[in-house]
Length: 443
Image 1: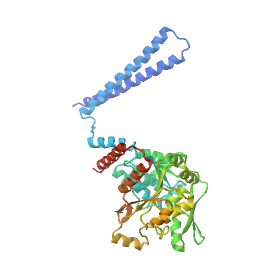
Image 2 (image 1 turned 180 degrees about the vertical axis):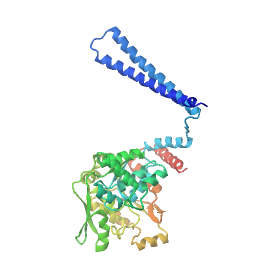
Image 3 (image 1 turned 135 degrees about the horizontal axis):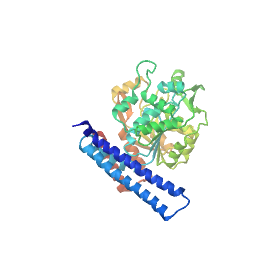
Image 4 (image 1 turned 90 degrees about the vertical axis):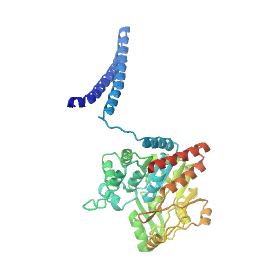
């Protein structure tokens, strides 16, 4: 085959593109001249109409013939295009499912929140994750100090949890450098930092990264203000900095009385407030109670919105107590801590784990002075909060984590039951589609 023959189909495509551009120019020229001319006659009107019709005709020919040339390229093997019927079916089911899903706002940070999001994205695309920006430790803290940006770590994890990316891309964004000046720094954090550098603010940077990674729903920082988390211990000591609080609790053997943010008048993003007011359900947690969940609701606009919204409000209790934060806490103690910071009657349900962990794992956590969170049902009922039980435990790399699929399933069932979002027939179709989607994703 001659080289010119190999290029001929591609040349034809380019010709039709050029012809299409000419057609568009004819139409534009005709419209502009028709508008700008002050004197009209039958001759001029006929000429401009003819010009515009010619442009439309040329554009039509270029599109149809261009498509034929592209098809010819495919048929002759110049373009390798294949359609996976299973993937296509999965996309159709996904589109039908996600647009029917309830509007859910999740509030928190840390590993727990991103774990839950991985399960929820199979049920709805109407997810807004409002994420803490009080982190000042690790790689996020270094970038915050060096670049003056908001900490990207929790944001990164939530974006990846909701993203439709290949495993290699996720592995790349989660990769941590092992040597040099970038040691222990995440590539995903650097990606967000670079995007922040070419954006007008951190919110825009997060939106751009979410768009690049095809995120289901939205991930937004709770505020764009440079907030610092502080804690008052029961011995009266004031501790500054999210990463310093657990250390101070352990060293001083004095538990947390309350936490607060500086500045106290930090302003929530309008998008976050609007999402809360329009939501069918608000989910707090799971995550570190005093350093991931409560810092978000200390932003006044968020707290006020939680009190005013008509959404179903749920708190996902942690499975294990956290040394330096919630030592010896029951589920009721977690709820009381939230109420003590923003007032009572801001929760309708609490989702608790009733499963047990194996002896080896239990021994490991006891060495770290961490235990299963006890469910004090009578105390929870006094707080006017209903209990939703389930076995959510999964062992991930020797750590106790929530099972994202089980947790998401029970949350969606509760939300749909209490909000009555769909009729019975639609509910059956909805869960049928979600099961098909999860099956297709796992193949």
